[in-house]
Amino acid sequence: MPPRNVDMPPATLAWVAEPLDETIRPEDVAAIEACIRDYFDGWFDGEADRMDRALHPALAKLAFGQDRERSGVDRTTKTEMVALTRQGLGRARAVADRALRVDVTGVSGAIASATVHSAVYMEYLLLTRASGRWQIAASVWQWAPGHGPRA
Image (cartoon, rainbow, N blue to C red; front, top):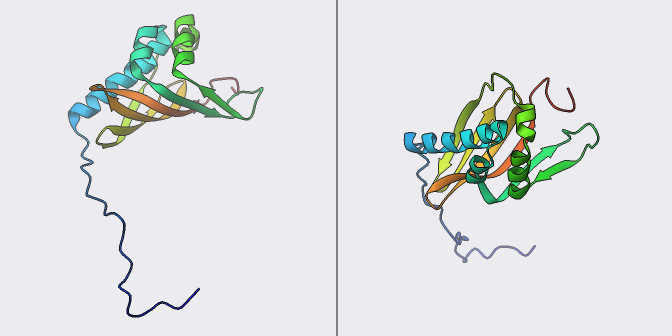
């Protein structure tokens, strides 16, 4: 590496990050929670319209090593989730007390994150606000203790 010329000005950044408003507003929390309720309740009640409304078209839903048969990555798209909901797979996994707890962990402009604990699943969700409503764009999930093929 050649020596630095002492007469050269110090390097400058190509951009400067502007401060972001990351205030989590009550109206965003309510809308995000409603989206997540559509996702979970739609799944457990077999309501494909609610599932469709909750999911962004580019959904990337991932589970790592949650199937007894496979130890890899399980990927699910929006189309697959809506079809599985319509088929009633979620109804088969429903429990009397869903014990759903939603923690909205961050909101910045049109993106947000949430952690969801239910009696059946644990999920980390990334959401985006598109066309005036929140939708789930990505999920990483695992079975709650005592549920799923590993139970």
